[in-house]
Length: 94
Image 1 (cartoon, rainbow, N blue to C red):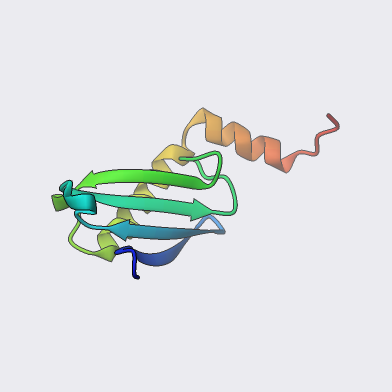
Image 2 (image 1 turned 60 degrees about the vertical axis):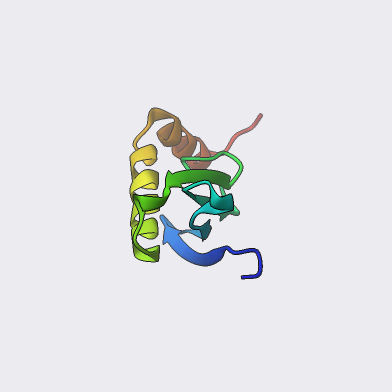
């Protein structure tokens, strides 16, 4: 990509998540990772999340995908996410 970001998609619990990443973002010694999803995720109510990781945090895209999946799985165990899932299954009158 012209902006220095690489992009891939992963599917987590039937949600497609676009992942963009750039190693050594602005020469800061960190990876910059962005998540974008049309639906809410357990790590963001808006579907967008910016995330920074030390440069030595990943060897390749597969490790980024594994990290994001583990992050989403861990966050999905929280009471807040469980309540969101329950609420989204029920019809609301108000």
